Image 1 (cartoon, chains in turn green, yellow):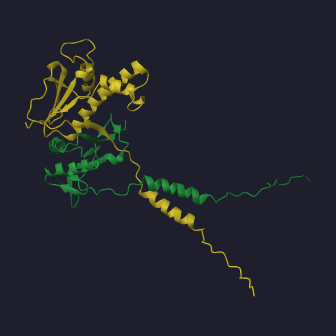
Image 2 (cartoon, each protein chain N blue to C red):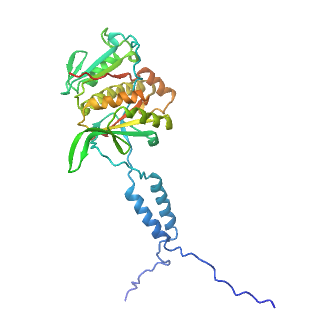
Image 3 (cartoon, rainbow over the protein chains, first blue to last red):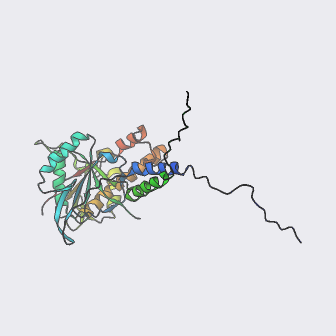
Length: 149
Length: 180
């Protein structure tokens, strides 16, 4: 009757997959480079507070963290406010001085990032700050989250 | 005599599973990656006090902010609420009407924050945030007036940026907390 013939494309429809491993490798390298594997296990609870006028710290390798917050005790309870540096809780605040001074020697441009729980008192923080002053690590940063507004 | 060596089969590594291996690794790193940028309020601590007296500061250049353990704020002996702090600070630093009680010039102004040991950290950071906000607005204003762009758009360590920085240096002093 009529000439309704299905049009057929001349070429085969195939996506070339030979470059796929390369694409995936590039992605892989990207994530490998950006990954930070060593995260400390927090022994204190740190809920960061929020602030508006904050700055980003681009150079992460200059950072050294000090965590201040209520100690996590077994059974989901919280103890008293404690200071944690690296992986251990520091009970003797006087030892912060030598700890931070050693870090400063390794990285002269050290920035100490203070990650303090929002419900902590200012008292413990100021003791830590006094120690930092004595260790002459003067650049500090109060870690905060960005205000959602 | 010359016996032709039989043609060896070419050694080949099967590369077809390479994509799968790469995929596995990719998924592992995708899951473990946390791309978080650290943000916070930067501050430079003063060196510890030696036994010498601090340099004299004229009273009008100093803004004393007291924050007590309940979060109430006194600025130069007058109570303020946290929302008023920024405007008051900007007025103090800039001193547009040349009030003899406010800072002589913006670069001489010093903000002193004093808290108590029981003051919650959150309130202290809020306070610091307001102070930083006041300085940010002032720098933005000056930068817009002089160069037509906000302060943040200036190049890092450029001459313009340093000029604005010198105009409004952040002089913030964190006093040792009182006990009562």
